[in-house]
Image 1 (spheres, rainbow, N blue to C red):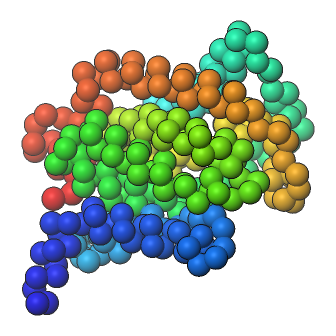
Image 2: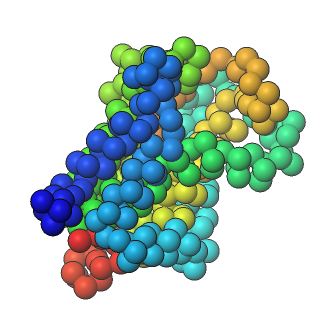
Length: 283
């Protein structure tokens, strides 16, 4: 019986990861509270890697997390591609008759940008990326390839937020359950971009996971809304969220993802040579 448990975990590790992620993340919701315990994916990812791959797996995860020598161009892409997409979305939205944000954060608190960027890592990427890109991506793309892996992760990632759609006052609640499919599409296109960066940086969880994920959150807030660091930390009333602008930003991201898929011929930087795939997958 004991010997069969590791075999079961290895063959069904992604399913085990999903179950653990939901059980841990949705604790506040299904116990009578509200919202998500945001560290669920990371905790689940580390647990599964530890049980299935042992010390070697945890060492590999640490190495990917600390992989920073990947070239300045990839640092620029991870940090500023979301900013470019947000600015393009603002322009498209304005052309369609939408309002242009007042860039309140950078007019009032531009000097706090590095601090705010670091703070937002804790509430998002740190709690998620050891799971989504630390475990799920290298596990799935080794078997299904980068595009299918991105589709699966993006879909799960989007649906994982369902408790937030039921939490009064959350961004997801403002968007509304009726737009959940659009929300899932948004997470899928982000996953496609993150898979590309992950593969092109030799499996850097630091850039493809933590930095890109956080940059998407950071630029979306600081450029696309009127939220400042002061209002965010004080927990005061947030400025109205522009759902139409968000829909436009998803559409712009979809367009960018399609271009990326065409440009990489669907490979997203994933090498066809099996030997070169080794740093990017989990067996």
